[in-house]
Image 1 (cartoon, rainbow, N blue to C red):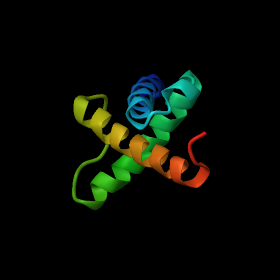
Image 2: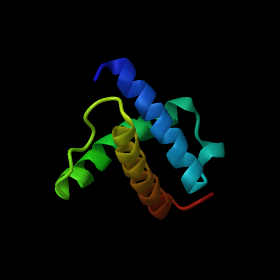
Image 3: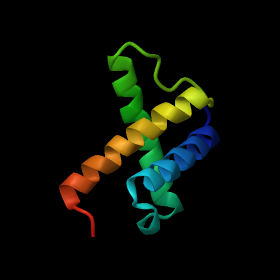
Image 4: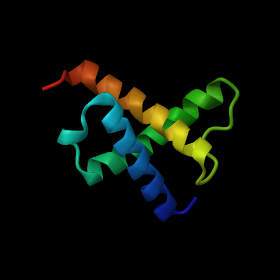
Length: 84
């Protein structure tokens, strides 16, 4: 996937994950992209661990994997730093 694809997928995944975890009002566009890209890596690792294919292009399955990883990442951040 190209850099633009990673940025778009990361931004969407990070934004949706921040809505699901209640952190949307504290996160900006750059934070959503970073959370989404790191979430894609985490989600890809989790799905690959269970035998799936992970993130393999710009498609709906990759978006779901990225959202899963981003929610896990934001959950860990909430546990470590608490909700303010």
